[in-house]
Image (tube, rainbow, N blue to C red):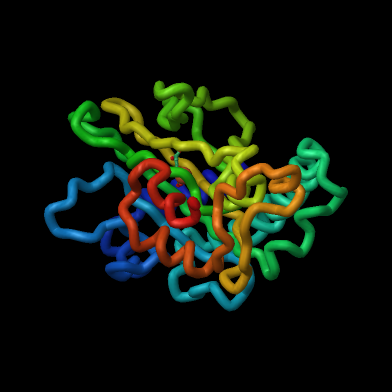
Length: 261
Ligand SMILES: O=C(O)CCC(=O)C(=O)O
Ligand SMILES: [Fe+2]
């Protein structure tokens, strides 16, 4: 984790022209820049991102993996293997907690997609005027987030109020994403969250999204619509949901309406 934080920070500290060698194309989802920008007059979030697809191999864009610092790719590779193991274990525990058959989620995501987004929030002269990252839920099944400890920038919406997630050294934050909300017919709710900027501190987060393959079709599991319980989400193709997600502005949990009945 420390090594990952170090190389990510080193990357964001590079001169702009160096970082711009890995540009996120307009409407693109990988590379360095601003995601979720759809118009010239949109107020931007106070954040720079480097987003990279990691698994399966065909989603990788090797030309967008920074070559400086020199050990960036190797570090991300090692980190991602470990985080993937963690995601699989989390899903096993979630299945147990929901009293599903052991391994119920195994294979359900096809060749699961793992992507990483590194967010760097510089200190902001007027933090009351902008957000670091607008409110949203993640489109993933689970998200594993690492953040540095200088400033509590991540907030989750609980009972209508924003609550800061206090960073704990060497601790990871796990967020439930939209996919789990759908699969569990709403028993698990994807968490609405945002990041705020700080007037004094910069902040780095390294965020891994673990999600179904694009060709997977999913909907609420039969276990959760038995006994006449209404089915709250329709079946859909996850690739379509992903496209819908990345072509919409971040607006709380609005993207999930795509799947609601
Ligand atoms: O920086 C953070 O803590 C939030 C990042 C986040 O929610 C995301 O990248 O989806
Ligand atoms: Fe998020």
